[in-house]
Length: 324
Image (cartoon, rainbow, N blue to C red; front, side, top):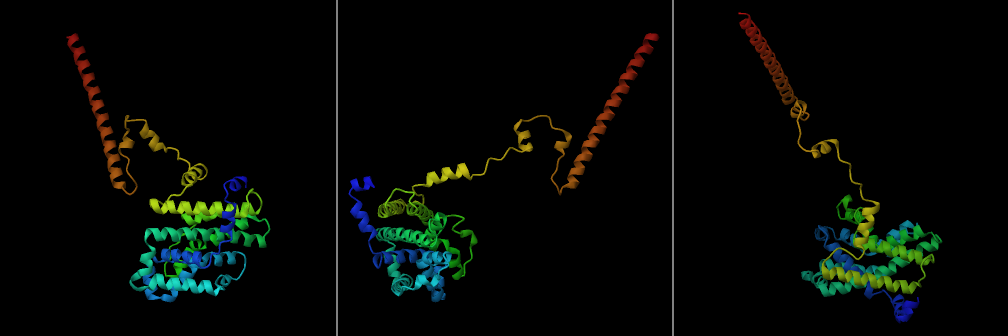
């Protein structure tokens, strides 16, 4: 890209693309993931009651993306655990995070400066995983962009997408926390990365792979750091997301009901049937009200008839006086 060449970032992007993830960046990924697991309600109790269940849940947090992407492509899910060095490193960090004396490791990593650095390093690994998932899908299904997006999304955010299964291992079943029902920031940003990397692999974007990796990684690190410093859960595209949802998917405003429309006309004369209206289940009160209305109508008719008789009597008495 001419702009990136003009800014002299071509060598920087190439160096970042060739940067090895093991062991430093993978260590940061494992620490941040296991800290997120430990901060979930009930995770510490499970670690004391059943260390094996806690370890298995931790491995899903660390390698969930690779396991899920392998399942989607009909490959052995245990292949994600075939690298003994990564599994041993993740297991060591799991023990230190959950069982270190005085909770020293978790407390130290929870300090804001250290956590920002670790989170930034984890976002670098996210770029590699999304791209690896897209390339893995392309080797099986050439130019199948939807499959590439799905597998890249699964490999980059597999821990979140498999959260219900991970919770089930810990004895927790909360289907309402499904990541698809309410997507978190990592899931959203990973989906966006899977889309742009799939478009680039299908040659719909005029960008080289290492340039796109550099741009996406910088975006992730800067956005994550900003969110942590501002203690905010909103990200850069939250206004765009809200606008698109309100235009395309929001429920249309309901038309006013006849009852509300009659109320909107203002106060007027109320009929006896309205004044005697009663909800269902109050038949006795309604019948009493209706009986009262009938009685009042009968009294009114009787009064009118008596008034007519009085007028007739007065007229007849007047005629008799004239005759006399």
